[in-house]
Image 1 (cartoon, rainbow, N blue to C red):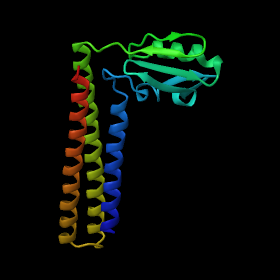
Image 2 (image 1 turned 30 degrees about the horizontal axis):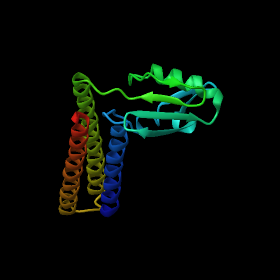
Image 3 (image 1 turned 90 degrees about the vertical axis):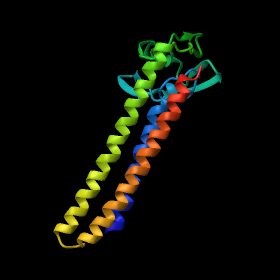
Image 4 (image 1 turned 30 degrees about the vertical axis):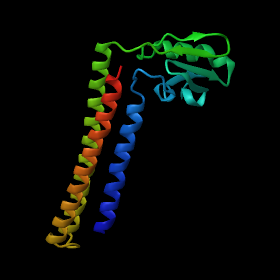
Length: 185
């Protein structure tokens, strides 16, 4: 039972880090990457749909994204969604493809992006700590039901605490790498 709780705890902590990585991919740096707009929602026939389900997104150059919709009728709604996004894009439409030039980030915008990165890393830390709380609660329930001894609970708590430290440290490293990438000119 203790092993199951620990395995579940570690799996949930890994998922929190994976979610952090996915979130950080959407934060704009100086380079164009398709992940910047892949999951952006577009109102398609009355339904919010991720852009990657409507079009192919590519980055042929370091400062350019190209969106090629599969349905030519979706071209204008995709363009409008890109213009309304808070990313500050100015897309151009040639009737077949939408080109999105990625302007270089200003120093103020870079600092704002670093704040967003720090916020997302903190959210990840909180998620990891919430997983710890759930695991500790499960172990306490096992102790209360006399299914494990106090010594077993303490050892399990220590192992879970070690996992928490490991994953919080890894989240910090991921955040630090993204901050470096954002501040890179």
